[in-house]
Length: 241
Ligand code: DX5
Ligand code: ZN
Image (cartoon, rainbow, N blue to C red; front, top):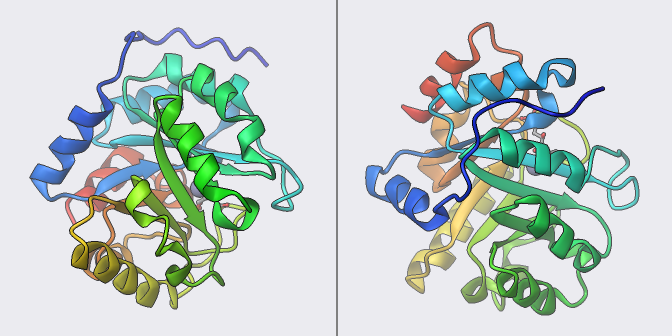
């Protein structure tokens, strides 16, 4: 397969400017997960996303160890980086993510999230990501209480709350996540922190509003976007919830 895309590229992405715009408009940030895209036709998929009101590319990295599936690595992140000016939000579902942070920075990641369950030295991982000039996210599995984030919250830019068990697209939203979103929203607001809440997995047109009302800032949507008859209209519908 030829991964060279011929879309127009921009040299730099002003992540902070784009993030601020979203905070000001009060609209949710929409981050389609490319895991559900048609890999035989990536150029068309990227063009579609670039023309849409999607804010971020959500890129899922799986190693077959932390999660029971393997997806892709920095090589493909680099392709997506060249295909878009939008923010590349890279979700690492891998063991020992510290060994790969630099590679994903070089590939063009703007935001790098690591799993709390994969990081015995999470604070060190976060410092490394920030030191490399990326925004730092912490992802948490459905069984991990948000309380576990208490002592790292002030150091990070985003929490990625998994609303399915990581590893596969197309699963159903776990309802208990709504309570976790509310709890986390309180933890963030009572300390006046600027940490975004991203919700990842099983987001649909039907549950998006409830998720936003619970306090989410970023909606990741794979199947809902890429399996839609009109993905651009679906992204707009999610954004205008
Ligand atoms: C799951 C991934 C998700 C997934 C979302 O391990 O982290 O980002 O691609 O896909 P949907 O929206 O289909 O649940
Ligand atoms: Zn993800």
